[in-house]
Image 1 (spheres, rainbow, N blue to C red):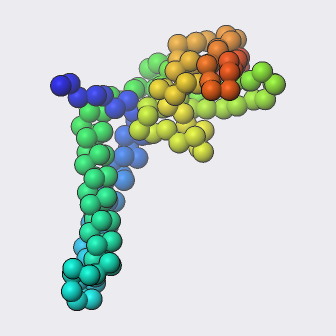
Image 2: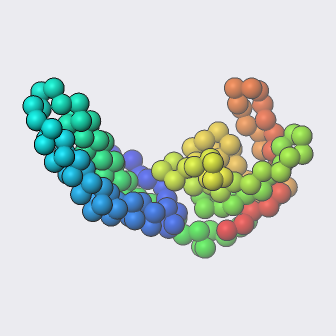
Length: 157
């Protein structure tokens, strides 16, 4: 079975590498310390602190494996080379909705998506609809609340 590529901007790859380093050094050290402290409480069969520390360590290792997998399968987009003619991963897009409200998004790969920071995935309904379109074009997005229309006002890096 083929590995799925993780689409990232250069910034996204740097962020993942930084998080991985933090988890491998500080995170693992903290997890080991929690386990050590929990073991000192005695009988491990009835030690909820130990169970929680082990669970936290398992989550930490799962996140480390997930990030390593994403980095190994990363396809980094050269945002500078792609320009601002059409929307692509790495584009900052200013759009207006039906009511005239202006919205700004940066199109990123799913691993970088953070709607609270205005970063939407190229796989999200809005992100997918915007990809490949130019300034001035109207884009339609099928959403649970019905058909949404956006006009692309600006594309930047």
